[in-house]
Length: 548
Image (cartoon, rainbow, N blue to C red; front, side, top):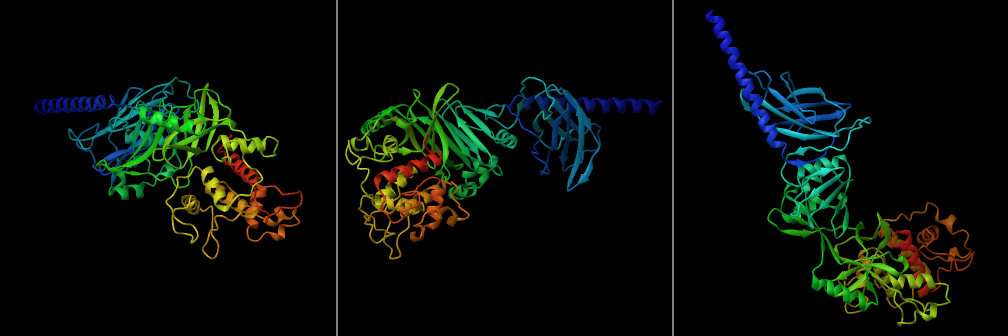
């Protein structure tokens, strides 16, 4: 009888301990489920970590399966590993484990329902009555093709950063983005961040290994489409003296203040234009944990951003512009125009940050009224790429110099002017074209002669012009490769007079950038005119989808 009473007492104590453990676990899970709304898909989060976590989680055809890892084996109690699946409101336990790679592995599978879009999975491992690691948490998206349920939501852990639903993360006004939420979202695909304010702070640790993904950041002022590949995280962290895990990428989309807004409006009026959109500052910087910042260099990658225009536009008379706060002037940036969901949208493409807006012009020149180049010249004049000799004349048949065309090429790419350099012996630092030549040289658009001169005032030949345009296309990452240049040039009886740019002229002909002077002559040595230059640039910009 004494043994029986002892056994009953032991059973009651064991049941009491299990009840306490379940209550403790449920309390932990309840607290966790009050956090961030996220959606993720089958992502190992803490697998093989120093404590424990999940691996190989899936939710398909109504069944959740997965593995819990722990570096501590829970023994001495039953129901040692707890897994709660929220959505189906299931609490299950498991005690059997296998040992592999320094971890104890607990596998589980639970049928719930195919009616949920997503479920959250929590786990805790107990040694005795003590949790051996902080509860792990993950949200799973239903991958079943037969899913017929409506939209659903789930809460997640990891601090602030907003909710995640249907590929979109809502970001609070302080800009914080939860690392866990962003990591899981990027695993599922490209992500959109919808800002309540003007900034987003992206944890760099979430961007590692996601170079193929794109993050679209949007608010009431504009939209930024940011390829993760342009962010050289290691280099940025090194420049700030920190590790990547301590790095954040700050994206800003902000309407400019009233003083700057007035200056932009004045700059648009100075070029004869009318402003059709708010001036918006688009900026991407890297931020260290001490608040120190460094700029982000996009290299040659043209990154898209968009603003809404106040009305539907005629694309031939409208352009995107950059406002330079130092010079107080506006200049051309590649931009296309469209109507999206009933809104008139300007999509601006550039490999740098600045203040952008949209300007409408209506320029014409008396001496191109009946000229073959009229449409191209006036289009590029409205886009601030070419200028007239006077307010009313363009001089389409006047030859153009090497420096003048270099300036047009730099302008058409929307490049930031570089400081004058001593690359060429005949380019003085105080010449009007010194910065242009330095910029074009840096971009690989121009080369000098063997005697280390550039000959800025020499009239440019069609051969040189075609080569510069092809190099501009290369800079913009537009394929210009021609496998057999001679086959392209064979129709021109004077192709043997091309001195050095056979490949470039063949590429230009193949891309529709340059035509022959006649059906069977290319005229590579002929001096190029202002009209020919404008037409080649217009064709380049259209091919690059830099204008429409």
